[in-house]
Length: 127
Image (cartoon, rainbow, N blue to C red; front, side):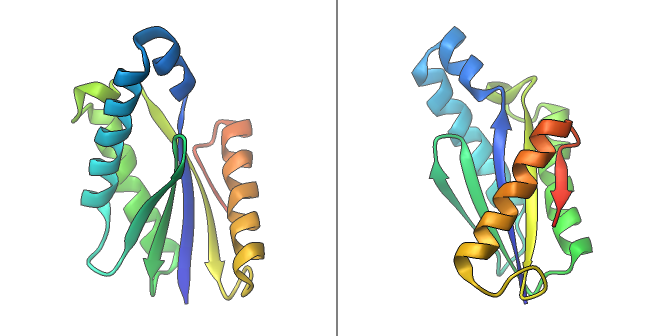
């Protein structure tokens, strides 16, 4: 059993458009650092493109996923990295094998949950 969390930075395009791509690169670096520090010992995170990240949570329950995501959100809210001031992130979560045991289907379900979180403004959606 493991959890797949897909996340992206809300409004990231605005950073690139108003402050330039170097500022966007720095914001991604800062977000990556926040994500790494929020993980548990056996978890892993990857940038999968643009401002999107995938997080693999080993042996994780829904509560474990909420804890990790909560740590990320709190650091963003507190402005621990000036490059990310005012930025938020959205998260979609799917669990293997409960939500899918096929890698492509698991990714698709987490991706659908991510876009539902963005669409509704809820910040986080579990499959």
